[in-house]
View (cartoon, rainbow, N blue to C red):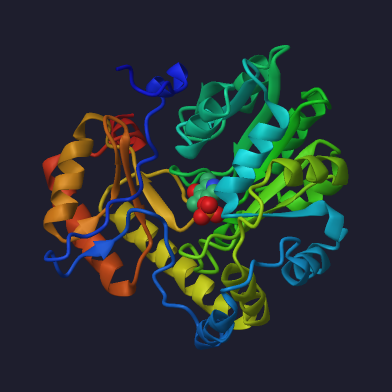
Amino acid sequence: MTAPRLRSDLESIPAYKPGKAPAPSETPAHKLSSNENPYPPLPSVAAAIADCIGGINRYPDMSGREITALIAERFAVDPAQVVLGSGSVEIVSQLMRATAGQGDEVMFAWRSFEAYPLLARAGGAVPVAVPLDSDHRHDLDAMLAAITERTRLILVCNPNNPTGTTVSSAKLDAFLAEVPSDIVVVLDEAYLHFNHDPESPVGIDFFRRYPNVVLSHTFSKAYGLAGLRIGYAISPAHIAEALRKVAIPFGVTQLAQIAAVASFQAENELAVRIDELVAERDRLTEALSAMGWSLPESHANFVWFPLGSDTARGVEVFERHGLLVRPFPGEGMRVSIGSVAANDTVLTAAAELASLVLIPTDAAETSAA
Ligand SMILES: *Cc1c(COP(=O)(O)O)cnc(C)c1O
């Protein structure tokens, strides 16, 4: 008997690898592998979710009217320009499915968000990964040069996951001026709230100026709703219409919508938490640099250790200290900003690691120069 037939090209697609979760017995452990917000939900958000539970026998509001209106108001756009997704991962998937058919090309920097190549391939498109430059930033010139007749979608992850780096407004402007206007360019701003880089583009300004720019935002990171799955696109209306066609019907639950509304209403409280995470990131960055680490400057809620062939050793040292991080074998490891206690432990582990490995990148070069 032959097995049920599946798409043959799926065999070449690796499964998405989520950040490692602590084993039940291994405590205490700090999960710093998925860039999650370390804070528990705000009481007001938890209460709004609890109030909603009695209604889960009903389908959610498919149009997400209330949260869509709030988002539209916040960014001064038309509600028709807002599309919800089951996390912004679904937004990225919608964008790929709405723009790229079989054999069309979806371009992104690499290394960047690991869902990009997986979603592109799953949709039948050809992923085109353009290496980051030597400063771990998007190489927009190389991306421009890689555009072909088949390019349908370009993703710019700003700040970039996992390196934390930003593109500059000036470079993005120069890039967008050259990209053919029939190619959709996505600014994935999952880490928008942590980005205080004055040189960095603010997506909404670019959205207003370029008719082919779409923004992808999420409630998962700064707002701490990763477990509920809600993100959104801000998009020109005709593209938004296409995104709704390929969206999973009822993909955004009522709990997620309600929690997002409650989060908008509690933004002052959330802003305090975001400021604390940013202050922690800056504290960590300074302390690591004082130890001799020369890491790319992060504008997100994580830091990137470009350890290269020492990555496995780095992960092992961190795990010994109870820190779960995200390894990219042979390239480096990404460490999320966590609680103060977790970040203190990161510094302890990083000091130990520094004594074991030749500290990578520019530090060695600068001191030798
Ligand atoms: C975490 C992340 C997302 C958001 O994922 P959700 O599906 O919204 O939880 C999107 N893009 C990037 C680059 C990310 O790192």
